[in-house]
Length: 285
Length: 185
Image (cartoon, rainbow over all chains, first blue to last red; front, side, top):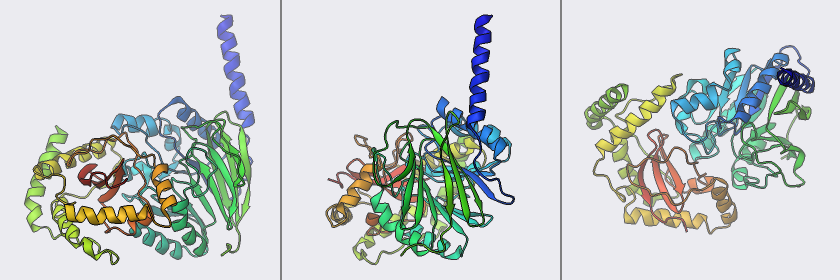
């Protein structure tokens, strides 16, 4: 009896700590665009479910309407049962709450995931969508062929003066020890980002959280620890503005007018990074 | 049962449509005019492939997997006699290898090699034409600067790097169409 009471007490107190720790630092402005970003999550392991639970708790205070997926959405086998275990089950409460998921493909994904309706890819390897004054561009960085690059340039050019956020799996800048920066992809993509005024980029692949100091005026985030984790994998480099490699995490984002507010939260509900990005009027050449 | 039904339908549609279907043109690559014969061979494959129904988005996980398996089976049956070198003939392979190795030795060689390494390359896989690309294995990034120098492919087909081999893959069926053994050093 005593053991049960003790267990209950521990469970209640740990839940309280989470709720306390998971304070929302985002401003919740009326009419803002609100979303979360997760990457390298599709393991089906308990840690993925725990992050999904933290996201649900966060959603109750900060009702984000969609989630961008930074690739490696489904690791390993791709049977229907595994797709359920690695996506539908962990995020069911969010899906039931009407939260939409917009996937990009990682190197562990099957390109046929683009036909899965709940990933909102409309049957395309790369796609774009708009929320409020924000254009999102989901790129397939595993297979960046000339056709895709031409598509990206056309879509970026058509996006006008809205916020432009690109997301894809392989990070152009990273302090991760396992992979590091994808320098060849950078050679191809960065000129387009600069030419058309992309302000923010999200990637995964490295199983850590990292926010990079602005590079040529562009803000880069890596969130590759929403299921997988390489603990202690962040090297000390001049690139890092903030990083977290001790546990899993996800990022929440709010965009209102010319301001982007972000908050990265760990598996235990602790805020590991937060801040504001003011949209620059133009990026450096 | 459902799988059998889909498979039968696909095989029927494939057989009936292949002859009538107009071939999809493979985009020419101005820098590599010598790949012409490859384009013609690929068009023969696309004649078969384009006779199959297009995939549509669905909420059904089962439908996606069933269709992939049925599609793969239909292609296997239609290309039962296919063998390594049907598309990548010795002459065409030589041209591909020259471009691939050129990319690995040029001024951007360091970046190209790093891109392949970062894609978590898989080795020691025994490839076979009409064989499945194992679903639990990652896809190695094909360096974009290498893709710029190779013939462009339609959306359902992709180049892959598997260990030292260079592969032509049907992405929806996840089948190996052909490959060049030892194309990468």
